[in-house]
Each structure stands twice: as C-alpha cells, then as structure tokens.
Length: 340
Ligand code: AQP
Image (cartoon, rainbow, N blue to C red; front, side, top):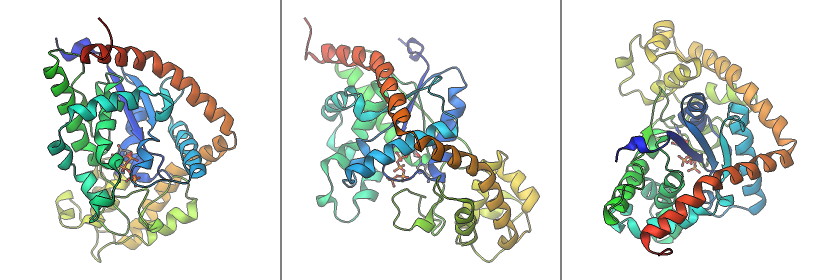
C-alpha cells in the first residue's frame, strides 16, 4: 500500500503555554490558514496536555490561554466551518494512543530530542516525565488522525522525524500499513523567528523577557517600541541576501519583513538595501502593526464571548472523535488489546 490510501489530511497544534507570538503566527498559523484553502481536511488543535509539560500552570491561566489561542486561530483566518478546531484534552484518544507510542518509541530516540535538552536545561533530573515523553504524545496527536501533512516551524523538524520513526516501527512490528508516514510542511522566510533580544535564540512564548517577542495581543505602540529596541548591529542593510550571513539579528528582521509583506528576502533587500536600521525599523513596525492589528482586535472581540469559543471547541471535539475513535479501536485490535 502507498500513502495514497490516506485521505490528504493536515493536523497541527500550538501549546496554550502563554500568549501567541509572531513566531507562532509566521512559522505555523499562516500556513494553517493557507492549507485550509487547499485540498486537505484540516484539524487544528490547542495542545493543552503539552502546555503542562514544562511547568504546571495556574488552572485559570491555562483555561484563559486555551480560549485565547482558539481566538487567535479564528482571528487569523481559521474557520470553524472549514477546519476542525479542538482542544487536545477533550479528545481522549490522543492520550490513549500516546501510551501505545510510549511503548513503541525507544529511550535512545527520545534522549536525542534537542527540544527536551533545551527545555530541561542543566537540571534534566528535575524535569517532568511528561516533558521527556512530549514527542510521543505529539506523534499520537498527528497519527490518531492519520494526518498526511503537518505544517510546523523549523524547531519541530526533529519531532516530526520521530513521528515518522514511530509510525514505521509500529507498522513493521505488527506487519501492517496502518499509520501514514507523515510529511512535515516547513515553508516560508520565517520558519524560525528569532528573539528580538538575541538572534541566536528562538522567539518563544515562555521567554522570561517580554521584549524578546511580539505577542499577538500587543498594541500598536508596544509592537513599534519592541521593534525599535530590537537588537541589531551597526551596519546598513545589504542589498543581497548573502550579506546577511553572520548577521543573525539583521537576518531575523528582514525575514520577518519578507513573511509579513509576502515577498522574498531579495525583494526586501532590493527595496531597503543600504538603509540603516533607524529607517528600516519604523518601516517594519508599520508593516507589523498593519498586519497584526486586525488580528489582535478580532481576538479581543472573540474573547468577550468565551461561551462561544467553548461551543466551537466542543463541536470540534465531536467532529474529531468521528475520526479518532475508529483509529484507536483499530490500533487496539492490531496490538491485541481488544478484538478476536
Ligand atoms: N520562533 C518561532 N519561529 C517559527 N515558528 C515557531 N513556532 C514556535 N515558535 C516559533 C511554531 O509554532 C508552532 C507551535 O509551537 P508550540 O507553541 O507548540 O511550541 P514551541 O515551538 O515550543 O513554541 P514556543 O512559543 O517556544 O512555546 P513555549 O515557550 O511554551 O515552548 C510550532 O509549529 C512551532 O514550530
């Protein structure tokens, strides 16, 4: 059997571990919206079970983050009529399949995961077991839908490779072609948006410095101020992309501009090559505010009616379970947990 036996289906998720960032938007959500308009069935998820792996959150904060993330998805253009929108914990088959995958994945595979090493830091012994097992749950999130494509930022590449390894090993162990070998979709000029304070670090919701990121809820003044204060070098912008080598902060701002304006890096440099950051930063701030302000005001409007968000997520969970229940049942049969 080939992958063509599987319905073209997209799954991706974001953790409600904090406020959505420009990195999440450019690296992931923009692609989610595009793929919704293509030939795929699309399922997008607030992965709340993942959000408690790095640290436990105050319950009210987690609930607020989850609704705000759903509002961010919808405000960015994900339509509950066109896509299934779910909250991971409301679809229990994700966690049930994850247990099977904990038994498929090898310790050696998990120990190589760089995100665990980054997030655990020096004190891995004090990390939760959940943080270590995170990639197996992520594989279950994807494969419980038999998803064929997963749009993600560059930082998730290794986890997607692990998902493929888990699907392959499961299929081999049980001599089946049950799980697809999912394709990552990592595209665009901003697959890894970097911190505004340190060009060697990814922009992240949970960075201790708020100045390091643009939050999707930041107002125009805050966005402009953060871009004005973004770390840069003293040189003017080059007129060709090669001139951005070894200039991570400059490259980051140019990549952000390109992705927001939906033009190439070469086009940005054709327009702004030779400009000092004193001139480029206000142009970038204006562009960012123009693109992000409608999303943040729509998020605020949606957040005024949390019951409506809950209703959308409950409906999404019902739709999702039409896919996940049969896949889990069949998995249990293959493994020998139920059936003849
Ligand atoms: N800086 C980024 N640039 C491009 N893409 C990014 N993504 C995250 N940060 C960037 C992409 O967003 C999707 C959701 O990520 P996530 O929230 O599930 O986890 P994360 O990658 O760990 O994101 P954060 O913001 O860094 O969260 P915390 O701080 O909680 O760990 C993924 O597709 C990711 O690639």
